[in-house]
Amino acid sequence: AHFFADAETLSQGNGYELVKFFFLMTFAAAIPAIVSGGIAERARFYPILIATLFTVGFVYPFFEGIIWNGNFGFQAWLEAQFGYGFHDFAGSVVVHGVGGWIALVAVYFLGMRKGRIRAGKHTNFAPSNIPFLALGSWILCVGWFGFNVMSAQAINGISGLVAMNSLMAMVGGILAALVAGKNDPGFIHNGP
Image (tube, rainbow, N blue to C red; front, side):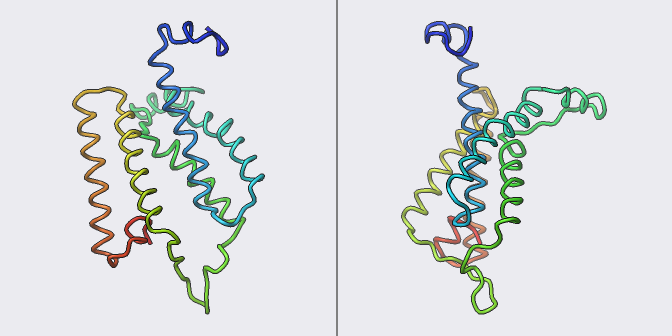
């Protein structure tokens, strides 16, 4: 079946592939979000839109194909050389690494945000809307459960372990923020 087939043809015997496609598509959407967070308030809309189309259309599929689908023989080469392939669980490199590397290059060229240095000292920006900051953190946490548990690609014992590890990591992060910082919502939800 091809992409433009009717729904009955596409869904017949392709349920898992369609869910996997949707899952990988949500990963593709995460990379531009990572980049836009890194370059907030420093870039114009249309250049970001063009970069997003290039990233989602070419950069992400290239790395996703190499790491998760065995394209270009990279995984086979790793297995032949070292006895193991590269296992990227939940997109730590394919999504977060690639997004971070792109953001790092963009930040280098765009420079610091205006107002970041006052009187020769680095200053933190005060959160503009604490309820939205908290809501965004909560939505992100719920999304992480979906990403992490779905990355196990099975509903069995490992999925429960992944969910509990994700929960403990979130709780540990909040407790560390409370101990290391003040009882500051901006620090707890956003980090330093």
